Length: 119
Image (tube, rainbow, N blue to C red):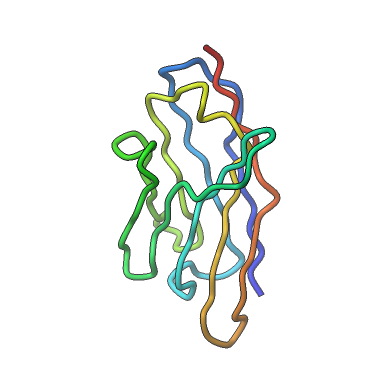
């Protein structure tokens, strides 16, 4: 089992920055992939970016060069650093963990944190 808690959302002006945190209940090095998703009002949830256990990152095209996923020194936290924010980045941001093998294999989600970017 993995519990995830996101934090760091808020209201920011276009062009500003925010850093989201995702605290996991187990070491993120025991989790195969950590993902950040977002869901805008009236739209489907979309993948923003991911980081594998080996440290490889991938990003959705619209956030490349603006968003960065990293791991904390505490080994239980993943960050989403967002810069040059745009109104279209507005949405609820979710942390997701995928564990491929036992123990605790499965797909886990946090409760989400709201990000609002004003124009």
